Image (tube, rainbow, N blue to C red; front, side, top):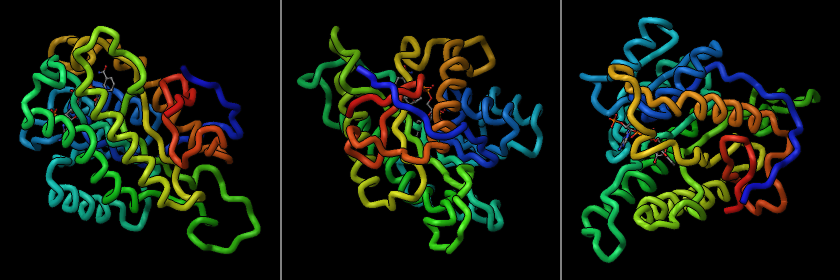
Amino acid sequence: MSASVPRSGSPVRASIVLVIGAARGLGLAMARCWLDRGAEVIATVRDPASPGDGLLALRAQHGARLVIEDVDVMHEERIDALRDRVAQRLRGRRLDVLLVNAGMTSLPGRPVDRIATADFNWVMNSNALGPMRAVVRLAPLLSVPASAAGIATDMPSPASDRGAVAVMSADPGTGNGGGGAEIFLASKAALNALLRGYAARQSPAGPAILALSPGDCGQGDCGAGPEGTDDPPDAARRAEALVAAIEARRADAAPQEPSAGSRALLIDADNRIVPW
Ligand SMILES: NC(=O)c1ccc[n+]([C@@H]2O[C@H](COP(=O)([O-])OP(=O)(O)OC[C@H]3O[C@@H](n4cnc5c(N)ncnc54)[C@H](OP(=O)(O)O)[C@@H]3O)[C@@H](O)[C@H]2O)c1
């Protein structure tokens, strides 16, 4: 069950966004939304030799506002190399949003007693450990309000100073009535727990820290999209809503609801807080 929360500010528009895992599906659709809003987007793929038709089409449309980078979050040294390249590209500027969308959805629908240990470990690494390593290593590139950076000022910090880090998670409390998704949901529960632990170590005045629950976008990886687009049909609508939710949370003066009990929030595509 989700709880609505009052908003304390107007949504702000990101000007530089890093999307990890943007070759297809929700990541591609959210990269497109930010480009359409006028942001610069750094979008990563695993295989730089084949970034996918969707991203190539976006680059043809938006030119230099889209940079295609590469990383596999299973490899720490590739995350570090990406961080260094992005820092160089930013030339002293800061990211407004870091979205770690990388993860997997389609699984062998096997219950826990029938999953091979190697498959279980692979899902956990893909959906929990890898994304969190990306968060920890890349979040220092995010913008922080002047007050959080220790800069003395009489002016209230503009909301647009506040960056956001978001991971693509799921609400582990729902959606497995028929069984079969338990390994996937366990991996997202682990991601949520790791994000909360990370958030507990961050300054309350720093970037917003969000786990996104996109809902079930269809079978497997958001359903099959139009041929040649890498772009599932339902992803566009959800992506628009999730981007709007992230921007709204960046504007929240009081991002932490006392009832939420965490510096991080799990929100759905309607920007409602989902109890952890
Ligand atoms: N679809 C749903 O119903 C649903 C529901 C809840 C949560 N989610 C989560 O939402 C996210 C996106 O879902 P989707 O359905 O759009 O998935 P998708 O179509 O399978 O796309 C996943 C993206 O993540 C990338 N990726 C996967 N593993 C990676 C790794 N180790 N390092 C870097 N990039 C990696 C993939 O890159 P490649 O193109 O190279 O494979 C791809 O671009 C996932 O985290 C998923 O678990 C989805």
